[in-house]
Image: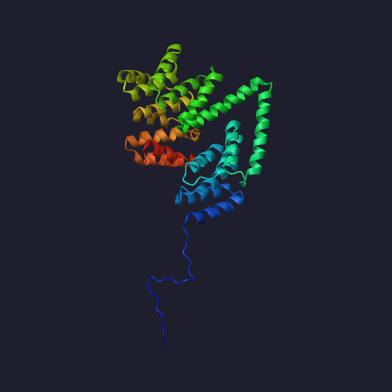
Length: 337
């Protein structure tokens, strides 16, 4: 009787291997998305991105999911990542235009819509883009003709605040500076913009001008915490030891009431290598209220790393990636990964 023996490492042709590639997870994500089961879809898309973190299709689809959830900034984070990749999708400009329109950033929406038409005049979203442009033009005309100036100004200030906040948190200093320059002209009574302007100015290499501005503002308001935080940061990074120690000692005795000031103070302490003091301030913050702040995760993790609490730091940074898809780019920019 003739028998056939398979070698141990030989696999019969009718047995399929289980696929762990990105497309496997992505397919499940698309199915969940079509069912509007967005929680599962997000899970599957993120699994696909763990396998292929630079796959532009996966990034775009996850961005569309965040748009559906009205998380426009998270969506934009992913789309900016696509634009910086080696194989950017032209459709990204349409998706950005749509998000900016929802955020009320109509000039940004118009710019990206026009860019899409310029790059792909026969693309899949040409009809939708032309309709969006018509709508944007109508809205912008109505805004210009609106007699209710008080409402317009309040609405516009909110949009400026949102845009400046986004650029500052993502350390996009040139974009932040441009927005803040306009804010200081149109809304001179909005004081935080002045200090954020000086901070962005310093980051772009204009240290002397930034210091001069803050010192002048501190003379006008000798109780200004914003001025003290900026001058602490400036003097430390310029190597002005005497001024730095004086400002730092003042900060260590201040305990702000508002969350934004509490966070800014904690971040400033971390940035000037007062790690223990910074961590103490970070711990006092309500974590649930910090999810929108990239700076919270970035500098809390940094301070923890610097005192060798690497596991805690890693946990903080991994959590940040769940809320801010481009967080890895910030870590790389700082040389921390």
